[in-house]
Image 1 (cartoon, helix red, strand yellow):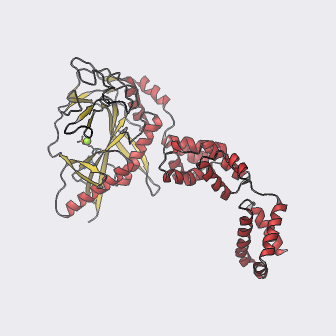
Image 2 (tube, protein in one colour):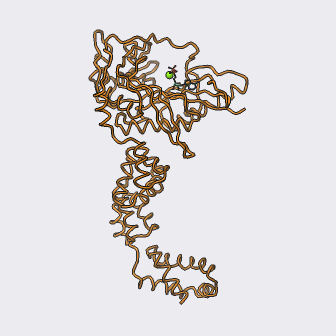
Image 3 (cartoon, protein in one colour):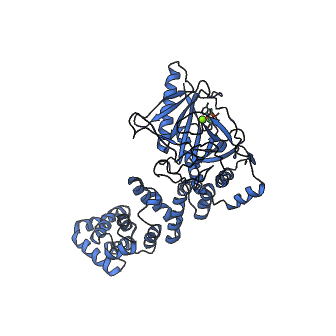
Length: 481
Ligand code: ADP
Ligand code: MG
C-alpha cells in the first residue's frame, strides 16, 4: 500500500518588540534569570495588562505580507491551564477573533514548481516562562524573563505532503518575518519554534488520518527529521493493523525518534473566555493602509525582480532572495562586479561552499561583498584568470585582504605581454620535440586534442599567470608555422 503524509505546522514566532506584550519589561535575550520580570509578568494581585501597540503593528505587517484578512476587531482571551512557569494560571491569547485571518504563501518545490500553502490564522499571545531542570538537584528553577514576550502563532492548513514541503514552508515563513524585521529568526535561541502535526493516509483516500503533534522543534533540520521519523512510525503501526493515537509527542534528536508526551484523546479544556482586563483591539482601514505603505520588498517580490532585472534562473533567484542578508550581499557583489550572473555564480558556488563547510551564515562571511565584487572585476578586465581568481578567493577567505592587495603582493597579475608568452612557448616547444612532431603529423581533429598538452605545460611554466587565450593563439602559430 502507498501512504501519503499530511502535515500542518503551528509556528510560534517571537516578535522583536523592545518590551513585553502587556508590560514594560525588556525582552532582551540572555539576561540573568528573573531580572526582566515586573509585577505584571509575575501576576501580582491587582496588576493590569496594557497592550503594546508595536506587537499589533507587527502582526498586521505579517498579515498583509501573506495577503490575509486582517481582523479589524480582535479579542484577547484567557487560555486557562496550570503550569509552574505560568504565574497567572492562564495564558493571554486570542481564540475566536484573531488579528490575522486566512492567508497564504507560495513555496518552491525541488522539481521547480510552486505550491500554495494556506495559513489558517495568526494570533497574538504571550510566551510563558522557562522551567530549568538542570541546575537544581531534585528541584525545578523558574525563570520568568520570557514570560510575557509577544508571540505571533502562525497556524497553517494541513496542506503539506512531505517533510521537505514542511521545511520549505517553515523557511518561507522564516524569510517573511525576517524580511519584515518583526522577528530575529534565531531558532537556536527559540525565537521561532514549531509544532508539527503529522498524519498519514492511504494514497487516494480523502479523509485525513489521526494526527499526532510534535511539540517545540527548533531547527529546520530537526523539523525534517522529526516529521520523517513520525511518518515512518505511523506507517509501521498502521501496517501492523494498529491505530494511531492522537497525542502530543516530543522529538529526541539524539535517538532520531519521537516519543509520547501526553495523550490528546480527551481534548484539553482550556475554558477560553474573553479577558476582562483587555479591551477588544479595533483597528481602522487608515491604520492598515499606513502599514501596507511601509512594507519593505518581500522575498517573493525580490525573487521576481532578481529573475527579471538580472536574468537569473528561477532557482538562482529563489536561493539568492531566501534571506534578506543573502539578497543584500548578492546585490552588493553584483553592483561592484558589474556582472550579476558572475556575481550569482560566485556567491552560490564558491562562497556557499565555504560557508557550508564552516557552518557560517552569510552575515558571518569573512569576505565582504565589496571584495568579492572587486575580484570579479579583475576577472572581467583580464587582470587575472578564473583559475587564479579561485586562489585569490581562498586567500581572501583566510583574511589576507582585498583582491587587489593579494594580486599585487603575490604577483598574480596575468601575463598579457605577447613577447613574454612567446618566450615561454618557445621554451616548451624546444623541450618537447617528440610531441611537436606528433602534433605536426596529426590531422585537424587530433590537433585540437594534442594542443591541450602544450597549453598545460605553458600555463604551468607561467604559474597559471599567462592569459590562456593568448597562449592558445601563440601555440597554434608556432606549432603550425
Ligand atoms: P489544535 O488547536 O488542537 O492544535 P487545530 O485544529 O488548530 O488543533 O490544528 C492544529 C494544526 O494541525 C493545524 O496546523 C492543522 O493544519 C493541523 N492538522 C489538523 N488536522 C490534521 C491532520 N489530520 N493531519 C495533519 N495535520 C493536521
Ligand atoms: Mg496545537
